[in-house]
Amino acid sequence: MRRLAGYFLRGLVIMAPLALTVYVCYSIVTAIDSWIPFSVPGVGFAITIGLITLVGALGSNVLADSLVELVDRLLEKLPFVRLLYGTAKDFFEAFVGDKKRFDTAVLVTLYPASEAKALGFMTRKDVDMFGLTNHVAVYLPHSYAFTGQLLLVPAEHVTLVQAGSAELMTFIVSGGVTDKSGATPTPASSLAPISASTTSVDG
Image (tube, rainbow, N blue to C red; front, top):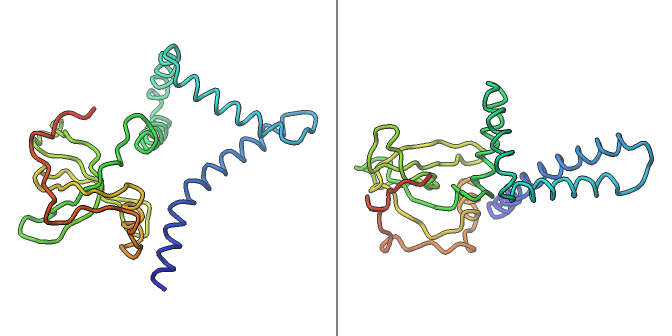
């Protein structure tokens, strides 16, 4: 039963982002089809794919950087829109952008006197802006939820884990009931804490 629950949660983690993407694309296709005065099967879908590809091409073009920055600045001036746009942009860039943030799996010692560890992802190696030297930012996802907790902890309390981000995220979200056979974790005896020398600026 626990194995079936693990399979279900693994599928949920995989399908949820896909379902959201499909829903957004379907909404765009439906809207485009409603604007076209004549009915031609597949036109809305083709236009949607073309628009997404065009936006991606423009976003990869050096000449388009200034336009993207202009749009960013305009949206940053709108209080409520700034919050939504900035959060969504940072979230997607963390997974698929050039500055991925959820690709470093770690174990965190929350209490020095305790042997308990927490699993999460190191998202930033430098938090000097908060007056904390030799500290790193670690995001701890919650089990059975798509929420989490951000902690700023000393670098020596963080240990790197050799495990895939997808497998680790599924393992955490499922509450540890999934089988991590697809991952390659490092034995505890060979894990080494992150040294202070690795806490360089990670813009």
